[in-house]
Image (cartoon, rainbow, N blue to C red):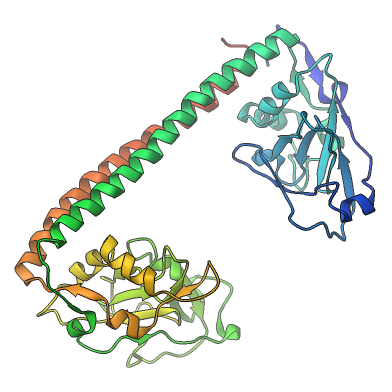
Amino acid sequence: MPEKWPQVALGEILTERNETPDPALVRAGEIPIISKIRFSDGGIEYRIDSETNTKMILIHPGDLVLSGINAMKGAIAIYSPETTRKAAATIHYAAYQVNKDRADIRYLWWLLRSQYFQEILTQQVPQGIKTELKAVRLLPVKIPLPELSEQQRIIEKLKNVTKLIHETEYLHSITFKELEHLFQSSLANELNKFKERRKFDEFFSESPRNGLSLKANTIKNDTDLKTGGIPFIKLGAISFGKFDPNAIKMVDIDLPDSSPFWIQPNDLLMGRGNSMELVGRVVLYKGEKHKFAFPDLTIRLRVNCEKVLPEFVELYMMSLEAREYIESKATGTSPTMKKVSQPVIAAIPFPDIPLHQQKIILERMEILQKRIKEIHDLQGKCLSELTGLENSIITNAFRGNN
């Protein structure tokens, strides 16, 4: 820690609140209850309801609030200094009043959420924080505490740095959307060269099949293939553009090799129940025989390869044309669970394109996807380096290195 700055125990500048809220005011909704503090930005979220059977603490405006369980992950907040309304939280949180004559609460917020503070804890609390970060452990910890003017200079510096990084992250998200638009518009241009559409079922080699309905007591808690059982895919295995062999659940049943529920090479797998954004998405399986099985909420499609390439089906089902049709036909009152039926799938207007033209479209789109991935990978690397730079700047600021 910087020798030029005094090393001050947090207990000298923080006083733990030990008040409890009036239960009647909590039930009436006049005192909001904190439900969580976000790791990412220290923002506070509140419960919708006011019912609680847990002991509560009272939080005053301008208090420093810590989640005892998740403080070391960044769950530290400043509670609304601009309001007069008090708040409540469960006893797994703690609220601290800050001595404003010696410390700026924003300085403490930045410091306690930093990797540098993690280093301080490692040095001063060698046994670690095994459960919750309680006052008895927190308050004896010594931190560098410069004059208020220096604290405020550090705050402004860190605000400027994070502003630039957040702007970069925003530009990254815009670029991501633009690249997705480029992909979709390029695919639409290729598909629009061919006007004829036929019902999807005219391309099937056999009828679609829903997955096996599993009994809850047959699903095992672990996903280790060595423990025995049959690996059934989860919806996550087929929801994000390519098959994920790690998204499985082990099921304690016998499934003979002749079972129709084994996934075979060139099978197309569709989620028939999911959120609106993900329902009806399709991935092509290129793996081994009899390695994975598919459960209910999954539909297996097999196509006539003399009429259509399985890879082209996978590509077409990514298109806005296909997505607009599926989303217009999906049913269900829950926003998190929409469903599509086999008749809906069979009636999808599918482009009738010669095989050699399908291959050309696939080759062109593969080149574009490869270039888009290269850009994504480069941006991901840049963002990772920026995050490391941000942590380094924050650490150096608290070490007194300008």
